Length: 261
Image 1 (tube, rainbow, N blue to C red):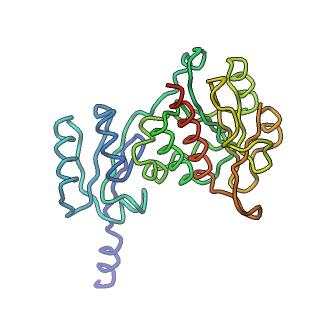
Image 2 (cartoon, rainbow, N blue to C red):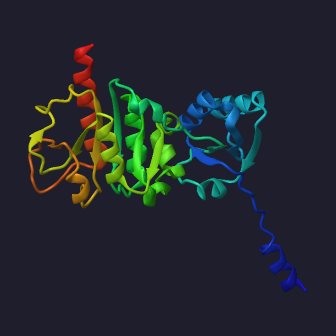
């Protein structure tokens, strides 16, 4: 009888049902969710026993917006993202790309990620994109699962501002963007021009294409690009991380445009 009771107690595990919506972990990311779309937050999860100024603030925001607050165990939060900082929100909305803006004859910068594999790279790219005014990020529909909780955590709020738009054919998308007067720049080590000398002001509608972490830009996409640009470096045997290279390209683009203001 004791053995049976022992087995019964071991199997009596508490299951926490996960609400619908996009899981966003981390203090900075959660702050931005409440700042941008508080009425779309479905539920707030806080680590059991955790009490500090951030969690107190989140609970107040949740109560003000009539959001359910649930205190859950550390392992439950870890099952979502292992860098959660003790807080996760579930939000029933994501930024949407404004397609009408693509047709406008106004300065704008977008990104096209050609088979980027690492969600952490996407998160870092979204963070930089938000801070440097990128209007949207295009990805292959085969890689549309990149926007994971870990990516949202790394983005530190960028995922709440920069739309990630998936497409079945990136080559066809880029051709359509060219018809809308976008200039397509591919970032690749074999580029003819370097980033620092490349004309990034005219035309003013720009798409930066960033290739796979290992293989770079695929040939069909590289053939569509108007210019292939490289970043100067001291060694030819290595390359910049995809998110770092993206940051450098966006920073230089932003700097050039700032000089024209």
